[in-house]
Amino acid sequence: MRIGLFYLHASRQNNSPHSWVLHFILILAISLVINVHMLYNR
Image (cartoon, rainbow, N blue to C red; front, top):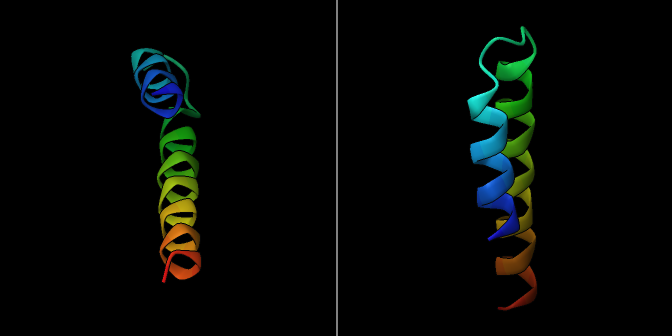
């Protein structure tokens, strides 16, 4: 839930030039967390 809210908050600030960097880091972090979760829940 918090990640989704943070993502919405970050995507709202489109006027900042680093918004795409934020989105990229967020997507990377989420995918990494999911991968680690899958590895440990085997």
